[in-house]
Image 1 (cartoon, rainbow, N blue to C red):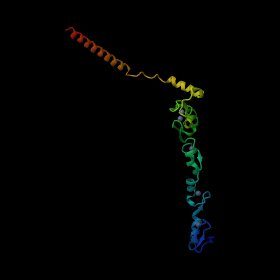
Image 2 (image 1 turned 60 degrees about the vertical axis):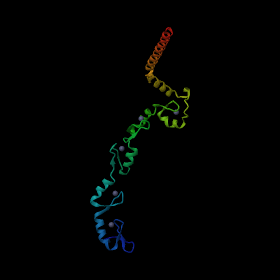
Image 3 (image 1 turned 180 degrees about the vertical axis):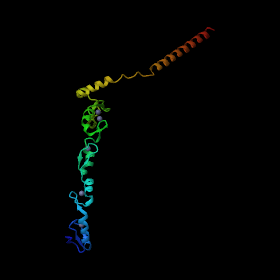
Image 4 (image 1 turned 45 degrees about the vertical axis):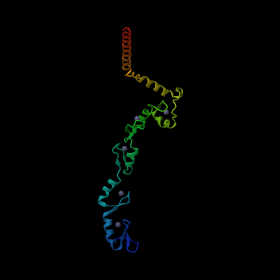
Length: 202
Ligand SMILES: [Zn+2]
Ligand SMILES: [Zn+2]
Ligand SMILES: [Zn+2]
Ligand SMILES: [Zn+2]
Ligand SMILES: [Zn+2]
């Protein structure tokens, strides 16, 4: 029989599910409730007895991460995959290359040591120092002595690898035109002089 306690005017509390049930229905409800439903020990929800196992496996059973196969509580899976999983894909701060989180620090160790020319102060700056450099860069090329040794070497190496600037293409053309012009003027002058000589001879 329903061990129902008095509640408001027209309702009683079902002792099985703790819900308020209209007084007129309480016996019928309790019979049905106690036979068919059970309280989940984990979430306190009332679930049908025959689906209790299904409820557990679909709601509370540990799941495995599809990336790293680690078993964990279902509730933390999303956070795990987004922020914790060692196999989640992240991008390098310096080159934006996507790679598994577990390989990131090793990659960035190397990647952040690469240097890039700062076009303001004309110095080679390590990528890992680029952000702080951009804040403090005064745009004045500093004297070499203040540049850390490693960077100076990298810079020298870089300069050595750089091919010599190609000669300006149009120099020979310009010289040729100049020669033609000079020759033309010389011929004209010669022509006038010889004509003048002819007229004065006559
Ligand atoms: Zn009930
Ligand atoms: Zn539950
Ligand atoms: Zn994982
Ligand atoms: Zn990188
Ligand atoms: Zn700079």
